[in-house]
Every structure is written in structure tokens, then in C-alpha cells.
Image (cartoon, rainbow, N blue to C red; front, top):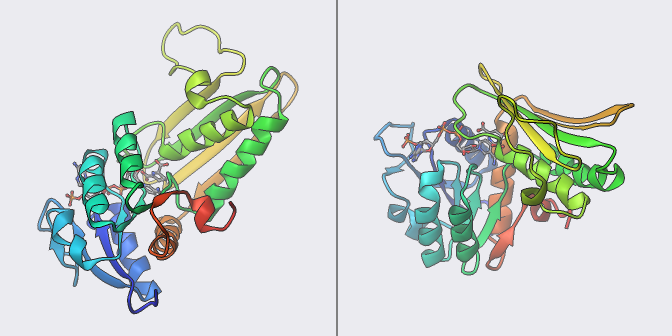
Length: 258
Ligand SMILES: NC(=O)C1=CN([C@@H]2O[C@H](COP(=O)(O)OP(=O)(O)OC[C@H]3O[C@@H](n4cnc5c(N)ncnc54)[C@H](OP(=O)(O)O)[C@@H]3O)[C@@H](O)[C@H]2O)C=CC1
Ligand SMILES: O=C(O)C1=N[C@H](C(=O)O)C[C@H](O)C1
């Protein structure tokens, strides 16, 4: 696939990520065929479609940063057309996630809660720290901070980091996730993994995994300063995905880490 031939659609092109994706796709030299929006909000020189099905015949890859309500429909469209799908939307239900898995049987799908190379590395380190720091001694908590408009909590990245810590400890996150704390909620469990979500202003995205014992604390922090770190990562994933067979892939595959 050469730069001239990779044809890209952006689902959610009017959003915070969508606008950054337009810049990343254009800077990379790939062809931006169009994007989806519920409104007719014009973006300079971008063809707007109200449904992804209107663009799918003309593209090699869909980059999708929208809203959970679109996931099942987009899964059907990319699967039917066997077109590569780079999915960054977070807050998916188990049913949405099952639709993604079904789509990946017919189309290459790269799914990541965070397309920055730095967070991909943080997830690997979190897995190693989970394995190295005994759950009986080190309480794991993930703290995340985002802009005031974010609609899902904890962030997809926080959940991925939590899942990585759990994997390092040989358990699933579902088995050890601490319930949200409010009121007279009781003491934390030993081995539990807790989450705290802060919202305010225009924070792009900050995540810290904290491992705290009675004697010390170790923190692993990532701060995103600019959404281009996500959109450039997603465009890299798009170029990679368009060359793959059907399957469900992560940013670790794209970066050649697995
Ligand atoms: N994986 C990653 O690296 C990252 C993931 N994200 C995730 O990407 C998603 C989008 O984030 P962001 O760009 O900040 O969000 P915005 O709210 O700024 O944009 C959402 C986009 O989705 C479209 N959309 C379609 N259907 C809906 C709907 N029912 N409700 C709301 N919007 C809809 C909107 O278009 P319109 O209103 O014109 O129809 C808009 O273009 C989120 O899930 C976020 O968590 C964000 C950053 C990085
Ligand atoms: O909504 C956002 O902004 C972000 N969402 C992703 C998430 O939920 O982890 C990634 C990033 O932190 C920004």
C-alpha cells in the first residue's frame, strides 16, 4: 500500500479527535475520503456522510473515534465490506465488545483505548510491576484525569492499565476490581485494583498507576499534552491494519512489540 493509495475515512470527524485525525491523515500524505457526522457541520474540504455506509465502498480503512452508540453499527459495516477498522472509542459495554470481536473475524481491527506509543509502553510496564510487586503487600490504584467534556469513567486507558496489572498478577480485572468508593464503603480489599477519575478544564489525558505498601509508594505516570499523540498513533495503526488479514490487533502489534 503506497501513500497515494491508502484511502481513509474518519468516523466522528467533527470531534476533538476527529479534527486532529484530519491533520494527521493529511500530514501523512494518505487520501482522506471523508468522515461521518450527525450534523452537516462543514470541515474544510472534507466530504461529510451521515452514516459510515455511505463512505465504505471508497475506503481501505476507517479510523473511528466516536461514541459507544455507534460501535455495533460500525462493526456491521466494516465486517460486511471487509474493510480495516482502527477503533479508539472507549466506554464499550460487553455487548459492544462482542460485536467488535465478531467484526474481527472478517476484517482487520486494531483496537486500543489509547493510541499513544507511551501508553502502550506504560501498559507493558504495569503488567511487569503487577507481576513483581505482590498483591498482598502492594495496593494497586489507577488515577486518571481528563477534560470536563469526557463522558465515560474510568477512562478506557485506566481500565487497560488496570487489566495489565491484573494480568501481571495472574487474575482478570473483573475478578479483582474494587467497587467505586462512596459513603460508608468499608476498607479496601487485599489484591483489589481501584480506580479514581478526576475531571476538569481541558486536561488532554493523565494516568498514574500507584503501587502502595505500608513502607513505600511507586508511581508510573503518563501525561498526554496534545491529542496529536493519539491521532498520529491511530494513523500509523491505519497504515498497518490495511495490510493485515482479518483479526483483532492491539497497538502492541502495530509497534512490533508482540
Ligand atoms: N483510543 C484513544 O487513543 C483515544 C480515544 N478517545 C475516545 O474517542 C472517543 C471520542 O472522543 P472525542 O473526540 O474527545 O469526543 P467528541 O465528543 O469531541 O467527538 C465525538 C464524535 O463522535 C460523533 N458522534 C456520533 N454519534 C455520536 C453520539 N451518539 N454522541 C456523541 N457523539 C457522536 C460526533 O459527531 P457529531 O456530533 O458531529 O455527530 C463527534 O464527531 C471517546 O470515546 C474517547 O474516549 C479519545 C482520545 C484518544
Ligand atoms: O476521552 C478522551 O479524551 C480520552 N479517552 C481515552 C480513554 O478513555 O482512555 C484516551 C485518552 O486518555 C483521552
